[in-house]
Image (cartoon, rainbow, N blue to C red; front, top):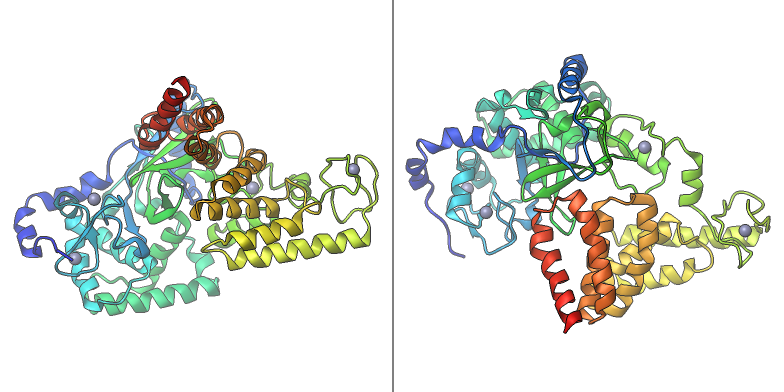
Length: 494
Ligand SMILES: [Zn+2]
Ligand SMILES: [Zn+2]
Ligand SMILES: [Zn+2]
Ligand SMILES: [Zn+2]
C-alpha cells in the first residue's frame, strides 16, 4: 500500500495554514442542517432563539427550503470504512494511508492537508496503539479533547444570522450519566483506551471534565449518512444541535459529504427554532420503542402527537381481520374487529404471537446482514396473520428488499419494494428521505429491467421527494437520479 507524505514535510507546508484551518473548517457561519440529538440547553439559548425568531419572524418558510447548512465541529469516520473511505471528505474511493500512524487514509494530499491541524496531534496517539482498532467513540473523544485544547470552545455554530452555539452550550446531561450504569461502564472503557492512546499527555482532562464531554457527545452526536442512507461517520454539529426531536418532524437532516443540510418538509410560519423539529430516531417503531430509545439515549420523554396517540400502537402492531373481505387493522388483544365485528379467536392470537416472535428473533439475528431465504420464511409466516401495515411485517419486507438487491434478484426485489411503499408512506410521511430512496431504488431496478414507463413514474416520484429533503443541487439528484431519469426518458422515446 503506497503511503503519503511524511509528517515532517507537512509541518513545514502547513506552518501558516494549520492554525487557520481549524477555524475555517468548523466555524462556517450559517450553514448546515442535520439530524440533531440534543435538547436545548438552558434559558440563555431560549432567549437568543426568541429574539432571532422575532428578527426572522416575518419570513415564511416553504416546504423544501434549506434552513441550515453546517460543517461539523468534529467528526470521525467509522473504523470499518477506514481503508475504503477518505478520513477527511468521507468519499469512497482509492485511499492512501498516513505514513506515520498507518491508521487513517485519505483520498488526496489536499484532504490530508485539510485535516492535518488536528491529525498531527492525533497521529502519534494512533501510532502508539497501532495496530489496535480504536473504538469510534474513543477516537471522537480524543478529537474533541484536541479541538477543545486548541481553543475549540470559541468556535461557534450559527443557526441564524446572529444566533450561535458553542460546544459548552450543548447539554452535557452530567447528572443523568452519573446515574446511568450502562453509560458509566462505556465511559470507563473509553477512558482506558484514551489512556493507552494518549498516555501522560497533559491535554487529557480529568474524569469530571471527560464525563461532560462524553455526555455532550452521546446526546448530540449525529450519524453522517451516505446517499444510500448508511451510517458512515459520527459527528457533532454545534448550530444544528439546537433542533429538538419530534416523531412527526417538520424538517429533515441530510448530508453532502460531511456537510449537513436541514430542509423544511412542511411550510413553516417563520424561522423559529423552538418550532422546528427533526427526528433523532427510526420512525418505523412503536411509540413504546421510540420512547424507550429516546429516554435511553437522549434522556427525555417524547410527548409528540404520535407518541401520545394510542391508535398508533394498535396500527403498528395490527393483525389482519378474520373476515377476508375486511381490511381493518385489528387489535389482537380485543375480542372483535372494530369495523366488521368478526371475532378474534384464541387460535388466531396464538398464530399471531408465534409469527411476531419468530420475526423479531430473525430480524434481531440479521441486524448486520439480512438473508433473503430467512426473510421469505418470515414473510410466509406473516401472510394472512400480520396486517400489511404491521411494522414488523414492513421491517421484514425492507430487509427482504435489500437482501434481494444484494444477490441481484431483481424481480423479487421489485415486488418487495413496491409492497413497501404504502407502509413507508404511512409511517415515515410523504416527505422522508427513505421514501424518496425507496422510489429511486424501485425506479433504478425498473430501468435495468427496461420497464420504462414504470421507471419514469417512480424516478419522478423519487425526484419530487428528494428535491425537498436533499435540495435540487444535491449530488444524489445530480449524479444519480437525473441521469437515470434522462436515460429512461430517452429509451422510452426511442
Ligand atoms: Zn478526501
Ligand atoms: Zn497519521
Ligand atoms: Zn414521539
Ligand atoms: Zn373486520
